[in-house]
Length: 602
Image (cartoon, rainbow, N blue to C red; front, top):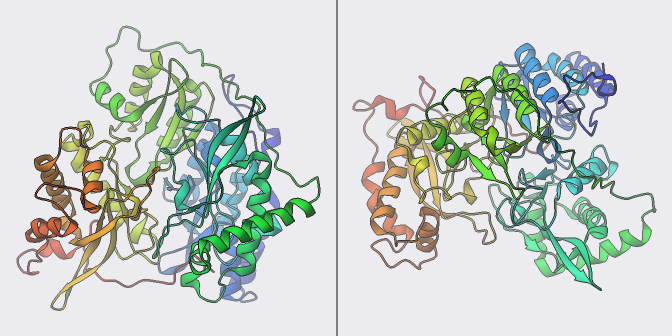
């Protein structure tokens, strides 16, 4: 079966508009695994091949893989959710994980079963090709593109076109390191300054006509050393989008550091060369690309409007009262679209996890309630149901509640980001994944999601300094490490404050090291300090931003003042007095910092 002969699941079901798959890649992967097992392909060459096809190594073993499914622009259809649910139950652990880059990951897959997952994905037009390795990764697009009040135009067609052009393109099969594109809808809803190429839609008037274009930022990125991207030029016309992309990729391919893995992302090249020199090189290279590319080399941008048609359903809840918790959920999970009468609903997932049963339920809910017929993966480990009519929101809530997907707080501080950590990653030092869940559960118990002064703040957690959890652009960020009392080790995190990824993007300022089992008390203490010292119009985010910039006039004037007040909370007890302190979340064994070989580059 292929996507071309799939039968629709119902009158309101939509088939994916793009087939990203190639079934022959599954057959080739299966053959290559056999050759590897027979010793006919060495480990390093197989590793590169495996990563290019989206199979990431699993912690401390060569027998299992994590399969990363690319979801370009975050568009995920009901039939695809159902297929992923089936594959998860058959070949994985019965659940899937939504990443911060709009991918869907299946963990602990037996290496020989990866090709079976690839076959299954191809039946619904999905692929894992180039989801890992030194290639252009999943092309992201804001989940609010097309419905945001502040956008100039919908960037989704441009993100889809860019992804189509670059997938399997020889231009980017052997880059010095991974490369990321991110299309946003506006300055607020995205991370345009924190990726290799970030794009914000803008327009200008020429001779009475509106011309579309982009604000392009280059050389940003998060990691062990992070940089904020630089603005290329005042206005990049849409016809120059492809030429600019090719030019930047060519320069990175030609000049990127292939010898030092720790410094081979494009942001290091920009930093070492200097922005002005790099900027001039891009503009010159673009002129060459524009003059030499064939006329058939172009982006296939489909600006045909989406078929928006509100599903006609018969309510099975007539006369029933709305379940308890609806108002709280609505306040912290729904975004009012620019289209009158419609909302986008952010479905809360604990650290991005969703079970197979929930995937199936969400597919059904999407068909029944979304007027565009598909969902979007978000930037913060959630799934977004868009074009929900306001009159359908109570019944939608009831359906989500039944599926265990109606937790409140998605659009608040009570929904932290946590990377996979030691649950699967070779480089992780702590279980950041479980910590994020513990924080969420505690914050919802305290109803902190209902506090408007905390709503625009973020908590992001990485299991190591590499920033997969985006800790450096969080209001309160953490990355994992280890501490020691005598011979006894315990999990801990370096805490940073004041990061953000909007128009005023900045990296967080390092504050102090906090033991894992003291993270929640420390965050609550920070909130308490904020409440005591804030001004009437402050939010936690704006207040911390003022502190880290040295513009606060209360008793907290600097990060050092935070350290002094928080110091008593981070004192390490002896193992005899508090054995739990020395265990990581989700573990009942002694803590250690043993790691494997990373696969961010291979």
